[in-house]
Length: 245
Image 1 (tube, one colour):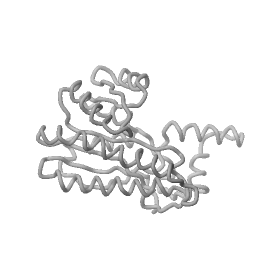
Image 2: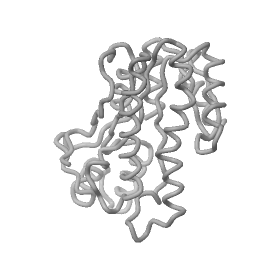
Image 3: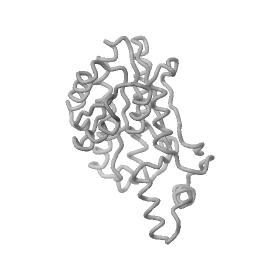
């Protein structure tokens, strides 16, 4: 979803810095985006790294107008109360919440000095679904939403907008791989299998009856980052195909 967002921003003429933990993958992403993109490498789960990443992006771009935080988390964060150890909670806390906090904290002085800017964070439709199998993930995504609303309130007078995007089931590489695995395991064509899984096992009643695409999420991120959303702040925006929760 982060790469798809960068694609839309570049198509709109924006310069972007793609951040990643793997230097090779980050460079590959920036190269694929073209001359308007640069890469910076680091891990926002490590204290101090977000400051270094943002500083590198500011230097490469000549300033900072906005930041999108699309960090995810490992599968272990999708655990029940009795399964989620302290280590699982701690890792999810760093991945989901503190990764967002550190990135925004590092960017904010640049945005304020710039006379304003935009912050877009990533929540999840699941934070309103209260699913016991995803307790650490859901709990900390709720924290991201509360953090984002507070940032919008606190820094609005400085011209900074902050919004939180809550995706539902989005067919990223991992879900594409799952679709292929289901087809192979069941000896069936891949069409419709993921959609069936969403309803029968994930209990997601999606009005549009399909998962979303990264590009659709990227369009929403890019809109919120742009001046087209100049009067939108403090919003929790669902992009879930009309999922019941």
